[in-house]
Image (cartoon, rainbow, N blue to C red):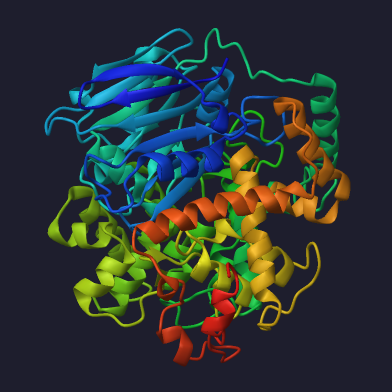
Length: 579
């Protein structure tokens, strides 16, 4: 039987609860957002005693379903002031699913001194002192804990940025080989974990009973349909785009489309795009050999394998993983085209425990202010080290792009609800702009990914520069994303299920197999919208209004080269998304 673990950091005790009936069919994002609305006062301080941090694997996570090893982390965000769900692909998700742990709820007001470690096994959970990990970078934490508890455990931790409660701090999860490299990065939830004085979680899956599946034949049938779709589609199949080039394949695609934000969102294309793009990334990994690897899996059940291990010139491992969002944020957005500099910045973000998107956009804003010049890779590395060291300048950068813009009086600050925009220029990709503006999560591409239709022509071709119909496209994409995040399949299955109907049917059938439900594909929008309404309700109670569902003012009057277009989306159009 599934259970919820409540970890009270004030009393330093752990209570095991049965799952309430109203939560029985939820997992992942649907579960975290529902619990946050029910249990967290919307007006509370995100770093104060009344906020909670919730870890929840998806409904199918831990089963044999392909690419389902995702975990959602939910809380009130110190970056946006609203509700937040951030997720990661990691063996930790699979382990919790197999242990039948529906959620771990971290709550209470801890003592101001001392750090703690939560150890979870098949028959117990305990809080242990972790002062020896105080100040440790994430790789050091993993090294110590893998040595202490064995190399089959999963690890969750925060780096120095989380300990110092910086608003761009993420939560780091171990990958399939135990690296500290998989992140629930967005929204500053690492700062909440730091505020709870929880340095790390160790999950031991030995003796786990496995996911309870109500209808095994249906589950296998649906899982096979989805797997076949993933292994057939050009984007997700073995030897396909993601497997060969990783997500970084989008750098050149988006630059050619005029939608790659460059020089702090001043242009939509980057002259140095090919130097940091997926093709060059794959060629460099192959040339350097050694410990380099394309087609790396973030967890054992991943069949898409879009991750990579990037080597140094001598073949030794530099960092995992160079993804599109990271290469863009720390590369094109800062006009840096040196792949090794970008890799080093990703490594530092991993070690200090921060979101690469927020870090790259914050550095771009600092460059706009003249703190270091655009294109100065070594200067950008220095800013990240300032953050890791906790200097005053480091705290400014570490608290995100919006904070950095206020500190230096910068007008061009590409954020929504206080969160930095990802790697799709909303003036050139209108549907993404509407998602950025209206998502309860703040600017977040994973909240409603319209690029598949607008740029890649998957699931129906759309004109990226056209506004008409994009409110509907964004709303349906946001609902679909909320559905997928609730059952916690990898979002990249969307490429296959948009084009292959049997893949879509297989996803729903596999869910029915686990839960014993009778959902159809028609329920995807309904369930997704229920999650979105829950999240918007929290934000409304926290004081958000329609005025918060807007793109930055500079995008309404500053034309974006090369298309020379402004945002061009009316307030009425934005308000119609959830009218």
